Length: 327
Ligand code: G4F
Image (cartoon, rainbow, N blue to C red):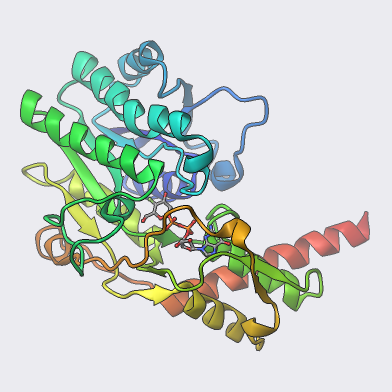
C-alpha cells in the first residue's frame, strides 16, 4: 500500500485528491495546523478514512517529525495562502507560507525521506501580465501580485531541489480550477452562491470587481487526476494543466444567472472595493504536454462546471432554509 501526505487537505483540491488516493488504495495522511476552529467541511465525509497529523509549513521541525512518522511515498504540497486579493493585505505572511513554506516541506523530505515523490502546486498566476498566449511550460513568468511572486519562488525552489538533489519533484502549473467546494471568496463560488440566494429571494444585489478579466476555468476534480499522474511517471517534470478555453468574468455571470433564468445586469453592481491593485487580464493555458505525456483528459466543461456549482448552492441553501424553519 502506498502512503501519501497532503498539505492543505481541508481545501478544495486537498479533499478531491484525498478521495482519489483513497479510491486507489493509498493510506492518506493530511497535514493540519492546530486552530481553535478547524474547518473540516470538505473532508467530513472521509474523516474516518484519513489520518490528520499536526504540523505547520512555517515550522520545519514539525514537518521533519511528520515526514518521519508518515514515511510517505508521495507528498502533495497544496497548502498556501491562496486568495490573491488577500496577498496585498498580508504580503509577508503570503511569502512565508506560499514561498518559504515550500522550502520547508522540501527540506523535510530531503532530510528524512529523499526518495519520496514531491508535487508542488504551482499556479497560472505566475504568468500574470502574460508575455505570450496561450501560456505553456516555457512561457516566462511575470507575476502581478504578492501571491504570484511567492508562487514563482515555490516553483523554482522545486525545480532547484530536483536539479540539486536529484529528487523526484514536480510542479503542476494549474490554471483556475473550481467546484462546489471552492471557498466563497473566489469569483466562481461568490457568483454561484449569490445566484442561488437571489433565486431563492435571500439577496437582491451582487457587488463585484473587474468583469473583463479572463480566466481558463476547469473542474478541480479533473485537475487532481493530473497531480497524481505527474507523480507516476519515469522522470519528474513540470506540466501546465488547463482547459484551453478562456472566459471573461462577465460570461461567468451570464452563464450562472442564465441557468436560473435571470439576467445578471439586473443584479450586479461594480464596486471598486473588489478591483485589485494590479490585475491579471487574461489567462489561457496550453496543456498539450500533459495530454500527450500524462494521458490527462478533461471531463467537465465550463458550462457544466458552473451549472454544477449553481445546482449545489441551490440545494445547500434550500436545506439551510428548511432547517432554520424547523428550528
Ligand atoms: O476567483 P479569483 O479570486 O481567482 P484568481 O485571482 O484568478 O486566483 C485563483 O486562481 C489561481 C490560478 O490562476 C490560483 F493560483 C489562486 O490561488 C486562485 O485559486 O478571481 C478571478 C478573477 C480575477 O481577475 C478577479 O479580479 O475574477 C476577478 N473578479 C472580479 N470580481 C473577482 C471579483 N474576484 C473575486 N474573488 N471577487 C470579485 O468580486
